Image 1 (tube, rainbow, N blue to C red):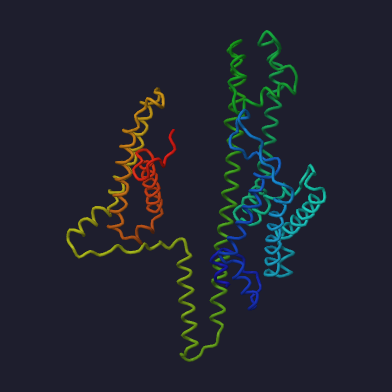
Image 2 (cartoon, rainbow, N blue to C red):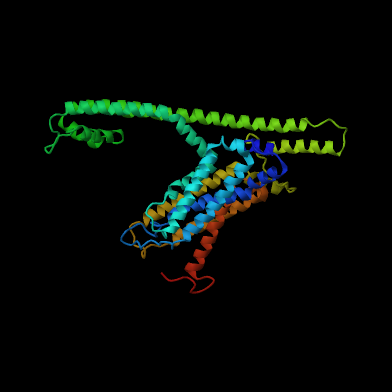
Length: 444
C-alpha cells in the first residue's frame, strides 16, 4: 500500500494496520472513486434544473416555453444523497490519516465546515417548503470539486502565491490610469464633438480611458479627427499600458504558475521516491533466512512491485500488441502496405477531400430552395467515402490485427466514427428509398 500510494502521488501518512489497509484499498478502488466523481457531477448539474431554471429547448424568447420547475423535495432528495456520500468520504479520509494529521489538513476541516453549512441550509430550505430566496449551499457546491481535484488545489495555491506580484502590477496600472486621466483632463480642454467635452470629470475620464486597454479605436478616432497631434497621447497611453504593463502582468502570472507547478511536480516525484524507498526498507528489514517458500514469496513480491512501477511510470513506453505473422508472401506484402504510416496519411487526404467536396456542394446549393436541391450527388459522395472508410478500417485490422488496431486511440476513434457513419447511411438509404419497409419514413 505504501508502494501504491507513492505510484499514485498520494501521501503515505496514513494508518497501516490490517483493517485500515483494507479500508484504504476499498476507498481508492475504481468503483468508489467513480461513485465519488459521479456524485460531484450530479450535485453540480442540479443547477440546470433547479428553480430558476434556464434549461429550455430554445433561447429565443419568442418561442421559448416556460421552464420546468421541479416540485419541492425532488432536487432536495438528490442533494441529501450527495451529502451522505460526502459525509462518508470525509469520514473515511479523516479516519485513514489519523487525528494528528487531520488537524494539519486544512482542506478536510474546510470540507467538514462546508458540509455542516450545506446540511443546515438544506434543513432550512425544507422548513420553508423551498420558498426561501437565498440558498447558501449553492454557492458552496464548487468546493466539492476543488476538494477532490489535486490539480485545482495546486492551481489555487499557485494563484495565492502569485497575488502579491499581481497586486503590484495592478497598482502600477491604477497609477498609470490615474496619471493619464489627469493629463487628459488638462490636454482635452476644448470639446471634441459639438455636444460635450471628451474628458469632463475625473470619474468619467477613467470610464473613457479604461476601455482603451481592450479596444481604443472608439475613443481615439474622434480625437484624431479633431487634431492629429492628439494621437501622441493615445499612443503613449497604449504603449505603456497595453504593451508594457499588461504584458508584464501576463509574464509574472506565467512565471509564477510555471515555478509553482514545477516545484509541485518535483515534490510529487520526491514523495513517490520516498514511498518506494520506504517499501523496500520494509522488505529489507526482514531477517535473512535460507531459501524457502517464504523467501521465494518475498522475491516474487519485489518482482511484482518492479513490474507495477514500470507499468505506472509514464516514462516507460507503452508496448502495443504484436502484429499477426502471415505465412503467405502475398499477405505479408499486404500487411506491409496497409500497415505502413503512409496508408494512414492517405486516409487523412481522403477525409480532407470528403470535407472539401461537401463544402463545394453546399456552396453550390446555397441559393436554391430545399425543394429545388438535388441531394443525389451529395448522397453518392457520402456513400463512396463511407465505403472507403469501411475498407480502410478492415484493411488496417487485417494488417495490424484486432488487438493492435484497438490499442491506438486514433484507430478506436476512426473505427467508431466509421461504424456510426455506416449506420446513418443505411438508415438514410432505408428512409429515402423505402428499401426494407415501405412507408416506414414519415413524409416531409
